[in-house]
Length: 470
Image 1 (cartoon, rainbow, N blue to C red):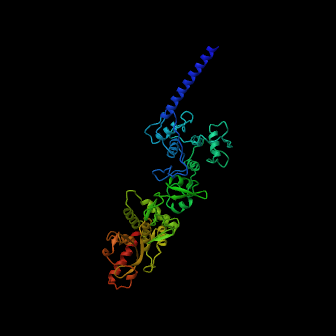
Image 2: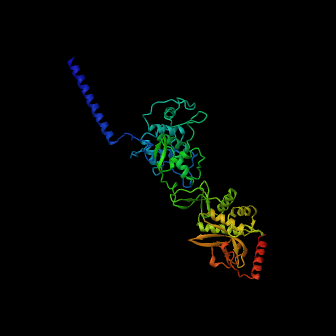
Image 3: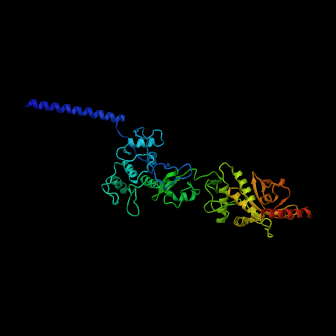
């Protein structure tokens, strides 16, 4: 009897010692990081709000385009509080790809399950269910939940994850009550989910004041996810007031510009000394409307002017070369129309009306030619002045455009360039180099020396110009 008990006791001791040895070895392996998945956690709203979505090289952010598996993994990867060195082998995925680090680390951490998560083709669209399943794996402590989406039954592989995320308020279904777990997830939808998870929300008041120039060409304030995506793309720090996020600093270059002229997307803006775009303000001859964009004051004229410049645009041209192209366009594209009425010397404000008449009818006089070129120049950001004055020794009413370069005023006379047909050139012509005097209002009363023959010759040239353009 005693011998059997002794043998049993010895066997127990051996087993216990063996278990202790195995446990010690397991702890040693854990300390070395062997076969122990890294703990991956996401940033929270209390930390600096670094951007986690970036646009494309063409200036778009593509809010309604489906998120790929590679992009989804990259989103999570960029939001990790720490990025351990652990990596898992992913069969069929090139290690040199931009998304390999993201996918391999998430796989090592058990966020991306290589055995059960289905299609892992990097360029395949990520489903809504897969995105939420990966999200909940960052939070293993989440309690079980329930969900009432009719398309996510208990038998669904997404049920547990969708139930937990719904309980946390991270996701919302569609108006018809469904969740549609198999539908592809859009970039905007992904940002909406991640902002809720991290407790982040845009400072709408600040963005309304400062985000005057569109950050992306395909994202307007009318889009349902505008503020959601702005939170995701603008680098900022934040505090909270009455339950709302307040951006305490937002030094993103897309919200602050060097003071002065700002050209963006075919539009003209002006930044104040604080770097913020001015609105409902006049700078020289340029008026910037409530939306911060330059306007001549008439929407139809603005549209026609922009259409012309879009046709002339060439990325190889400098801004002054594009101005010259606009000058040549004005010279060659219209017909002369004699008119007895003229503007008083020094009178301003006729540019938009004259330009619109010329653009509609394709005919006009010196004021019309000047008005079209003036507005083309202003749409390129030049502080162009349309001048109503006089020309020649015996001054006759005439309209032209004046633009300063380095503080020196130059004449741009598209109508006379058209009429003289190469005899003289009126592109960027200094006042001291003109073949005859140009008179502003303050010189109207000066004595003149033109003879009657010179005046008659000028009349004849004008009539000939009219005939040539018909």
